Amino acid sequence: MRLILAPMEGLADVYLRRLITAQGGFDWAVTEFIRVIDQPLPDRVFWLRCPELLTSSQTESGTPVRIQLLGNHQSAMAENAAKAIELGSYGIDLNFGCPSKTVNRSKGGAILLKEPESLYRIVTSVRQALPLGTTLSAKMRLGYEDATLMLENALALQDGGADEITVHARTKVQGYTPPAHWHCLEDIRQALNIAVIANGEIWSPADYERCREVSGCEDAMLGRGAIRFPDLAQRIRSQAAQPMPWSTLAGLVEAFWKDITEQMPQRYCAGRLKQWLHHLRQAYPEAEQLWQCVRTETDPKRLTMLLNRGS
Ligand SMILES: Cc1cc2nc3c(=O)[nH]c(=O)nc-3n(C[C@H](O)[C@H](O)[C@H](O)COP(=O)(O)O)c2cc1C
Image (tube, rainbow, N blue to C red):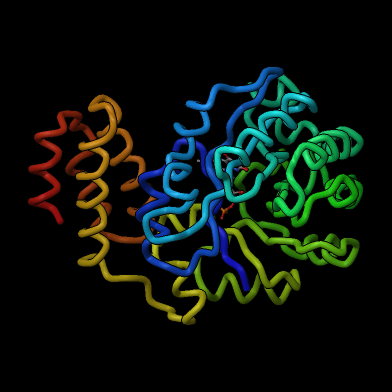
């Protein structure tokens, strides 16, 4: 079984990646996507999205981090992939699932699921640019409007040279609305001879087990479930039903706050804290209370006081 921390733009950045992977259980993490238009990107873009490049592409706790690229320009994708590897990324992941209107309008992300031949073209081109032995993965949804091209798309990724694919078991149109259609992953798995990593709606060890039974996939990528329950991967491994108590999690919230206020521009800190608390409050009543106390506050000093009082 391999468990992967999902790429989540604006959410699973270097700070939450560090904190969540430190709870254990993850085999690797994927960065937020780097958007490729038609040019090679400067090195600083890679360092910004993946500061772990400076530490052998590993988080502090030693979890490898893989850079994700999003775009449709095959030679620019290839060049940037080669650059990311040169800078030390733990493989390359390609994004064919992003539902954002802006991204889709410029023919990036999930819109490409309408054109299996484009997936094939991009993956082939990236594969050819990578040094031998580099892991290339790709992440797709079941389709754009519907899942009719699901197998063609998955096969295009495999035939183009992907070593493994992650499938978010929903179409673009289904967005993030439950359920995730794990049974479709079984059909994809049967059609492919590379690993298929299941993704979507895994919030607990019991969900993982059900997903595994229905999809036949041993490997899973955890997204919002790992944000809401930072110890989710570890609990899936140890089959522990109960998440960490609030007393432990409150310490992590404080550490996160300290980390971001020391390293991020002040104007972003309050938003980032509230964003995480918003996820946590779905699971922890104490996080709900804390969120209610801090939600209208923007001043970092006062937020520190409120956090000390509330946690
Ligand atoms: C805030 C947010 C940002 C996301 N950003 C990305 C991204 O940059 N690249 C990507 O491939 N998927 C992205 N996703 C999709 C997730 O990786 C994952 O496929 C999705 O959340 C379903 O998994 P989950 O139900 O476990 O959350 C994002 C999801 C969320 C909620």
